[in-house]
Structures are given as C-alpha cells and as structure tokens.
Length: 566
Image 1 (cartoon, helix red, strand yellow):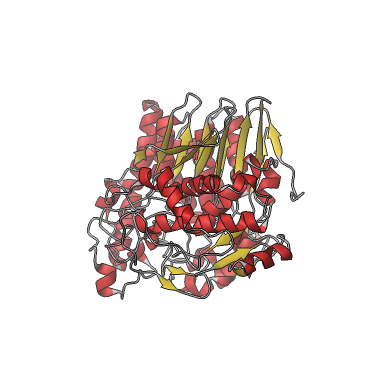
Image 2 (cartoon, rainbow, N blue to C red):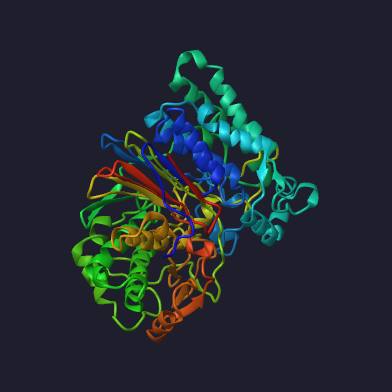
C-alpha cells in the first residue's frame, strides 16, 4: 500500500544502514565470513565518512549486541564531560547557554565503541573493518541531495570555523550533487590507526585492536586533539582521552505482547521507547484502526507522558538515581494514562508523578523547532543469528574540525542542560543524555529485529510507529517503514537551547486531511509535513523469521538509506 521499494529477503544475512555504501561495507564483511559485529562496525565507521554532516568518526556510537547464544549487552559509546570542566561554567560565564565550538566537547567515544565491540564479540581486526571507511574518505564518493542541502543551509555555521571550510567547501564552493567529496585528512587518521595495528600483527588480534585504540586515545591523535583544545580554550585533555573506555552495561528489557523489547539505559532516551509501548498497550491501541484519529491521538498523548518522564528523570545513572522500575510499573503507567482524555489533547506534557522538580530549569517555549539533522543508524543480523544495532552520531556544523586529523571530537555536550541541578545537567565526568538510542526486539517466534533511526526527539516516535506497523498491523518491513508518520513536540527539546512547542503535532501529508481535521478538533496543533520527510525519522530494520528460515530487511527512503540481504 505504501512501499515504493520491495522488502529485501535473504537466507544468510542482511544489513540496513543510513547510506548505501555503508550497507555495502557491512555486506562485504558478511560475505567475507565476518559476523554481525564485524559487519556492524564496518557499516558504522563508514557512516562517519559517508554522512560527514550528520555523523562524526570521533562522535558517539551507542550499540546493542545480542549474540546467538543469548548474550546481550550494550556499549554506551558516549563520552563524558572533561574532568577539569567547571560544573557551573555555562551558568556563570555563558548566560545559561552552551555555545557552539569546543566548549561543548565531551570525550570522543565512537572509536572506542567500535573497538570494544570487536574486542568482545567480533572476529576481525580494526583494519579489516575500517578499510571501507578509509577508502571512501581517501577516494571520495558522490555528493547526494541531503548532504548538498545541509551544506547549503548551514554554511554560516560552518564559516564560524576556518578549519572546517576547506573540507566542506573545497575552494570556497558549495559541493554540488554528483561531485566527488574527499576527506584526505580523515583517511590518514583512520589509516594511522590501522597501521599501528599492523605493527603488532604477530601478537594476535587482541593486541592489534589495543594498538589501534592506543593510537587514537594515547598516541599522536590524542596529542593533536589535546593541543588543539588547549589552543582553542577547550577543556578536553590528553589525560581525559587516555583514561577513557565506553561503559559496557546491561540492556533494559521488557516483555511486550510476548516479544522482548531491548533498549540501552537512561543515559539515553531508550527506556522512553519501552514506556511508550507499554502505555499504548495498556491504553488499548491494539483495538484501534491504523493511523485513525483515535489511534494517533492516543499515540501522541502517550508520547507526551513518556517524554515527560524522560525530562523529569533520565540522566547518567552514575550521577542520577533514575527510578526505571517504577516508571515502567503498571501503577505508574496507569497513573499516566489516567491523565489522558480520549477526545482532548493535553496542551503540553504532563507534570511529574514520582518525586521530581515540577518546573525544570533550562527549557523555554518557542514557535518553530530548531532542526538538528544529525545521526544515522545501522542494523545487522548474520547467518548464525547474531544481531547488531547501532546509532552513530554527531553533526559537524557546531564545532571545528581539528586540522590535519579531519575529525571533530564529540560535541554531544549540547545535550546536557547548562544547569547542573537538572537530571541531565553538566558535571565533570558525567555523560550527556543522548537522543541516539539503538533498539532490538526478540520476537515471540524466536527471531531478532534490530531497528533504529536518526531524528533527535522524533526517534522513539518513529521507531514505535514502525514496530506497531510490523507487529500489530502485519505490514511487511518496507511497507511498515514507508507508512506515514506523526511526531509530537510538546516537551523540551534535547538540544540546546531546549525549546518546547506545546500542542504541536507534525503530520506527514500522506495521512488524509479528514484525519488531520479530526486531530485538530481534539486540540492538536497540526503542522503539515510533505507526504514524506526526513524530519519524520529514517528507520532501518532487519528482522529474522526462524519459521521461514529468512531475514527481511528494509530501509527508509526519507534519507539515502538502503538495505542488502543475501
């Protein structure tokens, strides 16, 4: 009904990623005998090259891994604030704002996350999986419309940073669609890590991965990062880099309709996806027609409730007591549902139920959302049943490129609140609260389904709509991805300056006008999107079906995402 592409099926393995060359990289690794972790790391690193406006090689990369034997864990792939950063810096010196530039830098986590995944569950070395990222950085690839559009629309932001301009606007020109885009410094940085691995080739795979890690976090790369930060007035030091390792943490898992739904912890927004699914189930969405006004109203009001609990409670669990069990309990879900009226929209998100500060600092009302077009996603399932889900991120127009390296150390500090009293407020050693949140489902039939999307605060909304399309409405994967979506903005944005937009409900144009009118009559402030837009997320899915002995894969045409199955 909706799909413009077919669902792809394979009997051995499948990958879906936010750029077709990243999917090709992952698939090449699978065909060469690598497992899902090897392939996912290859695809994820490639995304940092192929989507240089949206994903940075030195950014964030949260990962969920489920091995065929049932081993399940998350790798946070998220850096913390530098140890020397004063907690009150932004309140005291910057008017309660987190400025663009090096002051929003946290420890870059993505290189560590990929290497940690390979160390724990992979079969290949760093150079074997990084070769595709290196090649595309060195040899270049064709500029595609979204990259061109972002560079056109954000030129003023890039111009703040002279070191970024030669890469993103070579010769001072805006790259045109179809032109070759080359990142030579980035290629040399990644190649240096691979070369350091080669130097210890005789000592085994583990020693090689450790050498590649040390090249970034303790060697010449770390030295250049530290020196640049010192020159520019930043706080990230070589010591911060040398001591960093991503936290490996248990996943958050809940049963839903006989399936197991898996997310990362409340250092990201992942558990809000679980709360949203549980609220919808308890609220009776199973009995509602797909994308009817009744269905979309309940969905939107439950989004407001889940995002309220995210706002009041979520933060780095090492610093904040996050009452997840209570938030996901039947009693709390029931209390939240009692606030929802079947025919009248809440004007904004509801207040706290559990102990929390009713008016949290740092959020302001606004009229128009600030678009943060960062992040991508990759999903892999291999022939053995191992599954990989990762959401690499960090855009490039808010912080400068380090000359000679071609990287931007993670600027994800933009997702902390400047006020340390907020649950996700700034503190040295504390992680920001991350929007990227990979997810996975172990189906009732024993299959596995990694899924995720870019989209900031729209992420869990898009992901849940696709899950319902597949597991409630029986759509094929690709049709479920392409079906029209909505998104609420009635809660504080996760991005500085943290605006919120009471009542705003964005609706893709493929949803009928009569449905939009019925939603408006319930009090929703309808904002019309085109028939399809990347603002509604870009969901990728791989889903195995043991009964059929096949894997299904789909990718969202709202961005240049593609799947490959074989």
